[in-house]
Length: 481
Image 1 (cartoon, rainbow, N blue to C red):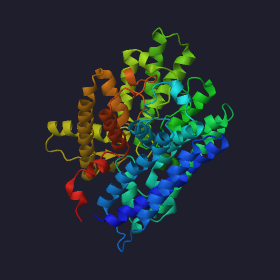
Image 2: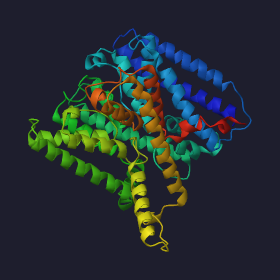
Image 3: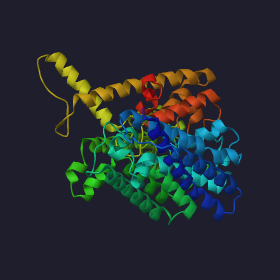
Image 4: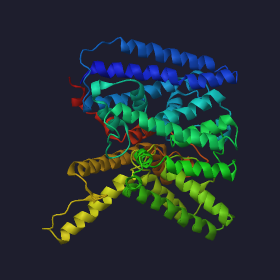
C-alpha cells in the first residue's frame, strides 16, 4: 500500500470540498443567513486538513488497483465526515450521526432523510438546503472524476480510479486519455443539468429550480419542499420525469449520439431499460385507473410515469404517496428498486447491464444442462462477454446479497415491521431514497437507532461505490506495504 499517495489524494479531495462549500456560502450571503459562519468554519477545517495532507511528500506516485479502491472509499467517507459539519455546527441537525446520515445520503445520491417531517425540511436555512441538494450533483458523476478533470492524478493510471468509482460492470475510455474522458463526461453532465434548469426556471423560483436540477442530475431526490414535487405543476413534473430517465442512461450513449453513432448508442442495455420503463408505466397506470384512488386517466399516467422514473433512476422524488397504492403497483416499484438504472449513469441499483448478463448466464446454463457438449459463449450486442466480467458480476451479486441480509438482521433489532426494514435496506443499498411503511414517501429514517443509521450509512456508500471499494477496507492484506 502506497500510504503517501493515498494521503495526498485525500488532501486534494478536502481542498476541493472547501471549494464546493462556496456554493452554500454564497447562498447564505445572498439570503443574509447566520449559517455562513458555520459553513466558513467547515471550509477552514477542510482547507487546513487538506493542506496538511499535501505536506506529505512522495517519490512514488504509482497508483495500482489496491490504492485506487482505498482512495475512492476513503474519499467518500472523509468528504461525508466533513460535509456533515455545517448541519451539526448550525444545530439544524443536532445529532452528528443524523447529520452524517443526511450528508452521506446526499453525496451517494440516495435521498433518504432523517428529517422527521416536511415542515422540518422547509425550516432548514436556504444555504443548508442548497448544500443538501448540491451534494447530489457532486456525487452524481463522482467526486474523483471531478477532481480528475482538473488534476492529473496517479501518474497516468486514472483508469483504476474511474473504474473504482463509476457505476456498472466495466468502464471504458471514450478517448485515449482518461483525463479527457472525465472532461467529456462532466461536460455532458453539466449541459444536461443546465438544460433542465432552463426548462424549470419558467415554472418555479430560481432557488427551487436549481436545487431540483441538482437533485435530478445526481438522481438524488432531495427537495426543498416537504411534499417533494407534489405541489408543482404538471409541466414541472413532466420535465423532471424526462430528465430522470435521461440521467439514468449510460453517458457513453450521449457521447455516441453526438458522434453520430446512433445504433451503438441504443445498445441492448438502453433498449431493455426503456422497455422496462414503458412496461412498468403502463401496468401501474392501468392498475391506478382500475382501483379506486380517484385519479383521472391523465393523472394516473402522470403519477405512474413520475414514480416509475423516480424509482428506477433511483432519484426518489415523489408526486404521490405510492405507499397507499395497491400491492400490485408497490411490488412493481420494489422490483424496479433492485433493477436500477443503466451502468455509467448517475443512477444506482444492480444496473440493467448486470441484470441482462445474469439472465443470459442463467439461460446459458439451462441450455448446457440440456446439451452438455454444446460450446456457446454469452454475448451482448454481438460481443462475447468475457468470463472475467461474468465472474465479477457473480461476485458482486453475492456480496450484494450478503450485505443486504446482514443489514436487514442488524436493523431488525429496532423492532420495526418487515416492510419498513426490507424496503429501508433496499432504498439505501440501491440509493433510492424512500421505501415503504415508515420510510415511505411521507416518512423518514428518524426513528432508527444510531447503530441502524450507521449500518444504513454503510449501505449507501457500498451501493454508490459498487460494493467492492467499501469491502476492500476490511481485508487485512489491503493495508500491507
